[in-house]
Structures are given as structure tokens and as C-alpha cells.
Image 1 (cartoon, rainbow, N blue to C red):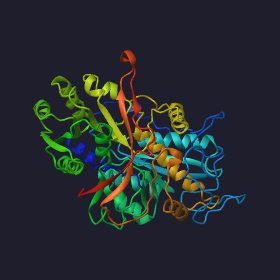
Image 2 (cartoon, rainbow, N blue to C red):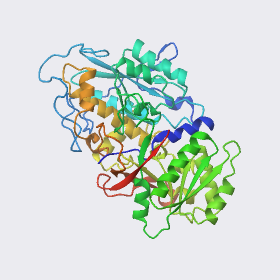
Image 3 (spheres, helix red, strand yellow):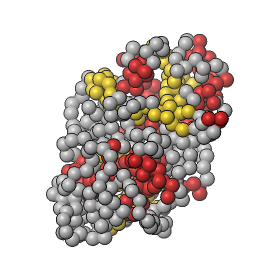
Length: 494
């Protein structure tokens, strides 16, 4: 049983062709830790605070107490690590007896959508600050240096070289990179990149890149399985199981752009594998006519809507669905983890019917489930970092936290002699990782392509608050670890 991205997040490539402009001021991106800029480093803010607090981010070697939640994720020592009273040493690049320097790259100030790639950065920053409040890793304070590559491949290379060659980071963590042109250099230098979003296919290609979802691919220099990626059909299975009397007819709206078309083809293939009638609808990304697509979908009786559009396109599609009566006809407008964000109520303020038909799927606890201790710890840390506005809270921010936690667990397992090889031994060890209960179980066990696999998922639906008040994401499954389906894998070329 595995946690899989289904399908992969590669649909974000369509953003490159759909410049939407920025919607947040630069002040929204004030760094909470050291941040690289061309030509230097911004002053680093202190990432500590006073006062005791229960935390779900405890890791081996940290002083925050025992692990809370989950059944896997932390063991004693792994891969030659040592603990006990042995003194810390400068045991590897980026490690001193008192500090560990990590790096993270995000494509946050890009020309198309400033909210698309920044969530994991917020989550990683919050985790590191919380970790340091509880003693760091084996007494070492963790320093996180971020770099914004602006969604540009050349600037990504610059970020990679600054972090690895100038800052001498021990590892990268919770990256959210649009074009990972520097991945080959990270691989060549043997630097672990842990808990990152697999937006770029580099995470299916290189052995030192460990994304947040786990991988079955050999990562031997080729994308996926000899150029093919896989995705299960569990999302489509969930809806036909949840709503057995709803006709299996789904619309897929996409742009007349290569990446969007390719991803739409994958959606259609997966839907048809689950017995749906798939109705593709192409719109011109330069002059999109959503009304024509929506009217046709309504006439054909679709009951679900999927899309391969950017954030602005989704908003316009929803507005057209409300205006043309499609929102009332459909059971769900299905989106993915990267659209599981807190700003839904304002983003879709002109389409309230469609807004309340938006469902999101993923492999992580719902960031709005604050009654769960793991989520409560994340939210409290985000509040302390002043990154808890609706524009900043998201499922990707929670996954950025979980990615940093995964690396912290790996580093904590090494004790005083922290090394990259010890960290990677922890990551590749037998057994699945569940992020102290934050994640569905996952691992990096290599296996050949398979036709069927048991995949699990979490599902949430946006619901407006009573009387038009602040809405939230409401979890739609009892337990994501038991919401599992034996489904076919669909193979596609990225």
C-alpha cells in the first residue's frame, strides 16, 4: 500500500503560459529566516521564542519530548548514527557542534501566481522555528536559508549554487520549484533534497532527491519508469463509491497548450479506466471562452468537473458555471492538493454555488482539522510566524511542515555524528513513514511498474460558514489511512 500523487502535480507547468499577475504585495513575503537574494543574504530573523508548549514536531535528539501521533516515522539511530552523551562534532558539510544549516528553494515571486509555490516555504519555516524552540536537533540549532528562483530555470541554478557552494547547506528541504534546472548539480554533489513537492520531474529521476510523496521509481537518471510516470485512479473511484447513484459523466476543461492538453489526456484516461464517460472541453488560454465550454458540459449532462487550468482560470470557470447553471447540476468540482487553500472564499467570491461544490484530494491530514494535535501544532507555529492568513494557510504549507519534519526525524536518528549518508540511510530504510500521523504511509522502496496498486487518500470539501461567515475545508472521510482502493495505474509521458 502506498501514498501516490494521482496524477502527478506536473499540471502546474501550464502556469507558464498563463501569466496571471501578482495578487499579494511584496510585504506578504517577509522572510522569517535567512533569505538569499542576488549578491548576498538578507539578515536572518531569530527563529526562537520563549515559553513551554506541547508540540507534535518532536524528533529523536530534540528536547521537545516524545513523538506524538502516528505509528512510524522515528526510530532510535539509523545508518551509523550515534546518540547517548557523545559530544557533537562538525561531522559533515553544513554541520557544526552547535548548528545545522539547511536550504530551501521556492518559485514564489513568479510572473504567474505568487500563491502557487510559497506554501511549503511557510510550513518549513514554521517547523524550523518550532523545532528550535524545543532545543533543535541533538542540541544543535537549525538555520534555514531560503532562495526565491522566480520560477526561472537560470535563477534556479543560481539558487542551487549559492546554497550549496556559498552557504554550504547540509541538505535542502521542502522545495517548491517550478523548473528545477539545478537538480543535476544537487545530485552530483550528493546533497539530500528531502520532503519537497515533485512539481518538476527531477524528483522521479535523481537518487538524492526525496520528495514528500515517496517514490517507487528507480531514480536512475531517467524520468520515472524509462520516461513514463504513473498515477492511480483512486480519486475517481472515491467519487463513484461515495455517490453510487450519480451518473459517471465527467467534464475535463483544459487549455489549448501542450502541457495542459497532455495532462487533460491523462485525466481522461484515468476517468475512462474507472468507467466514466469523459467529456473534454478545450478553451483558448489567450482568449478563453468559458461560457461555451460550460454550456456544452451542461447540455451533455456532466455530473463532475475536473480541469487543467491555473488559479485565475479556475475562478473564471466557476463564475461561468454559476452564471450558466452548471454548478447546480454537478455533484463536485474536483481539484487537487495545490488548490486546497484558505483563500477559497475570496478567490471564488463571485461564484458561491460553485465554491461550495469544490472538493480537494490529497495524502495529508486536512490543515483545517485543528482538533488533531499534529495539525494544531502546525497551526500554532504558523500563527507565531505570522503566516496564518487565508492567503498563506494551505495544504501545501502543511506538507512543507511535514517535509521538514521528515528531514528532522532523519537527522535526529544520527545523534552526534550527523552525516548526509546517515540521513539517506534513514530515508531508504524498510518500512513506511507517516509523518507522526500527518501523512498516509509512504516510502522509497523501488519496484517495477505494476498494473494495480492499493492507494489511500484524504478528501475535503469547501463549505461556507453559517450566515456567510468564514468558510473552511471539511474532511469527508473518516480516516485517510483506511480510505483505500485497489485501483489501476495509468502510465503517461510527462
